[in-house]
Length: 300
Image 1: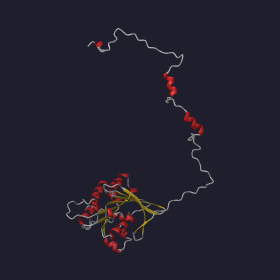
Image 2: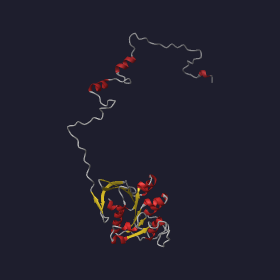
Image 3: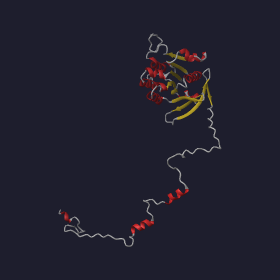
Image 4: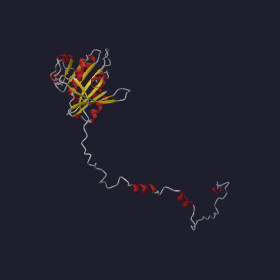
């Protein structure tokens, strides 16, 4: 699944942490895009260009178009090669300058951009680029655009992380166990049910991606068969179980709201010697006893 992330297009969100860094995976995906012949643009904000290119051979480095926003992020030096509009201006310029064909844009990193730009502005720009509508007036259509965004989610609150997560077509959350890295991949596609899976991998020194099998299941703690298991209900202040005699007494108990045939007969038939009651009624002078016209006393 990791080796086919870029073929899906859209925004691919790489969520790393202090324990499991994601820049190595970002560089591995950048290398794979370059080897596939795609146009690869790097927006470097968090580390220097030399540090990002370190580990790539000359063939890969020659294929990368690097936009350096680390050395002079605010363009204080007023150099001519600096793009107007900062990193977001570079994003829009990439759409305008690229020839038709697949394009991969690596953002290193989204966390840096969130600390320097409003979250709404960044989300709007990412939506426009990943949906290829950043430059609607351009006559030359741009092919599939894949945006790789590295996010250090521990640096941000749930609001910005949730906003970027809602924009992403693919989310890769890095983790691992026993020193082996894993990637939990969540894919969202229009009119399709989201799919997720966990992929175990390692990054080779040349930033090649090596997919691996998951670690073995942890062994269960050893238990001595001669030692009886401890019953967790032994020290409770109430009883969860009933004995055989208690269960028989419970089943034979007649509840007050249950009317048996004997109880019904006893209630309906008076017992011998039981006093009976009678109702004596003497009509009043104004009582209406005419059944044919019961409303004649209303004096209408």
